[in-house]
Length: 108
Image (tube, rainbow, N blue to C red; front, top):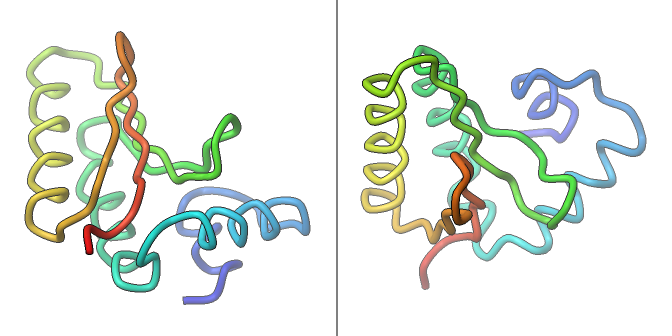
């Protein structure tokens, strides 16, 4: 998938800076090409929970942000993230005291 298309699907208006940021994330994420499609599918599945995949501004990874308005929706979103991680063998890192995960890459 082209970077511009991926950025658009994630809700960004592609520009040179975002394209470069996504390129850096791709290089930093182990096995990115193996998980890219699954990440986009996860983003679609999380929308109903007020959660989404985004570019991280602090690290060169994609992040999953959960902003669910209820505990039930948040719990469901966390379960979807865990399922995604286990099913597609993707390493994720939950940030302490936050409703955020980093997508670190494919488990080799």
